[in-house]
Image 1 (spheres, rainbow, N blue to C red):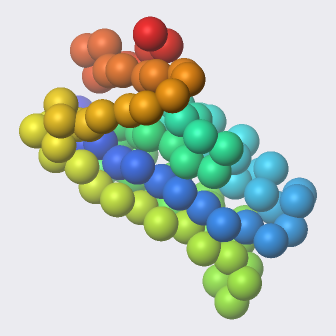
Image 2 (image 1 turned 120 degrees about the horizontal axis):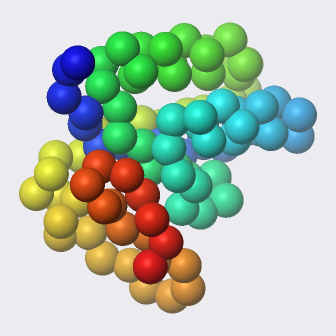
Image 3 (image 1 turned 90 degrees about the vertical axis):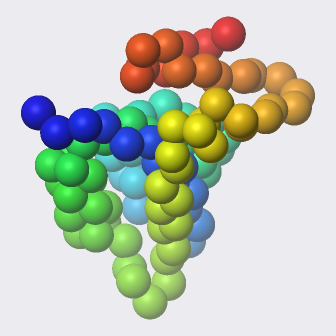
Length: 96
């Protein structure tokens, strides 16, 4: 199995139904950290599969999905403010 990498995925989807479908799809791959933002740990196969599924949902002329790869050092330096703080526990997410 290939090594997992961390990603932050943010989206701006106009249509409510499509936005719900995008969120539900992303729940299969990671943890919601804000209303339109997810953190995911994915291997190459999962990453390609996720992108393919998302691409079938959105309207590429109206909607936007941003995918930011993060290195392990960046994840360790991540800072949060306010309520609901998430953390990695051996590659998985857990609520602190």
